[in-house]
Length: 195
Ligand code: SF4
Image (cartoon, rainbow, N blue to C red; front, side, top):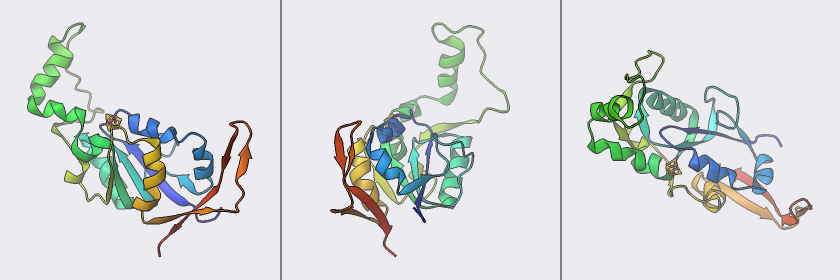
């Protein structure tokens, strides 16, 4: 299909649970694949976000690399969506905000139970931690949010086209193809931008 909608996704300070929930679309991913193509994403091998229609951001911002990646997505995505509680308000990782960063590092790498060879990692390859975990709207402009921890697959399925200014059309006649392997029947879907 020509002119597929380009989607990029990333996980910043997230747990990949939102991506797993997206994959819970299960058989619907087959129909989706006819309509969209994925740019940078954990499910592709593309290293940098290119020009895209939609960027889906899981996770808040906890380190310098998160900031860099988030800005890259903002520069390249027409529509940026905060996916899940972590992206929207920092989520569970933001619980560390009430504890000084140094105390967090000491507990994790020096004083914690079971720590061996205690030292705080300082390889320059490692991104520097921010003092606090931030929701992504504190770093870049966000267009839409999909709440939940994680948002359910049905939320992705029903809200994504609408949230992204697209029209979801179900063609009655297009051919609800029988997927015998699943014993299910699907109508075809078409997404079209309002332009
Ligand atoms: S919102 Fe929940 S599922 Fe999504 S990245 Fe955060 S903790 Fe994981």
